[in-house]
Image 1 (cartoon, rainbow, N blue to C red):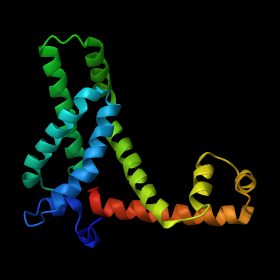
Image 2 (cartoon, rainbow, N blue to C red):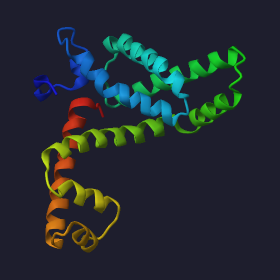
Image 3 (cartoon, rainbow, N blue to C red):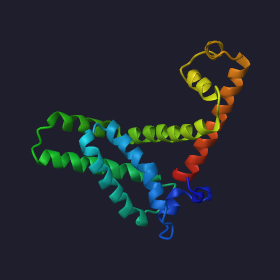
Image 4 (tube, rainbow, N blue to C red):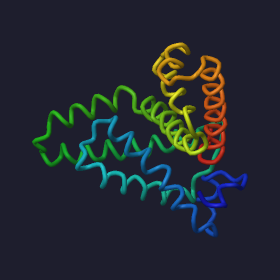
Length: 197
């Protein structure tokens, strides 16, 4: 990450600043993967995802200068979810208009959109931020710490983990606690930088 990430400004504030030349690249680095995750969960076919991601990013880029954050009215993710949802609906309608032979695919995407696109976006965002934070945490710890944490997520007991890794149960508790604490800090830090609540 660049040094500019150490400032108190959020990514959204940075990307709206025309003098911050690195901001859009940082924005795309974080949000492109997230958009792809949402498209996959929304059953958009793999061969159509890249084009749709580019269209969504273009709409975001065009809309960001006009976007005004109003905490009481709408979160940034709500605005983003509307752009993603509208892009998917436009894509599906285009397929329908062409009399596409992919009727089953169109129906699957329609069902997902009607059911819960905003829930998908909220859940995928939480998963996405946690994944980025965990990647960062993995660079901080060595030895058994990450493996202890991973095994505890699999709901293995401290005794099972200690036997599997040949360490004491006390070490399991200490390592798990350290990784968990650092992960929480990383998630909070990331949310400060790239998320508007």
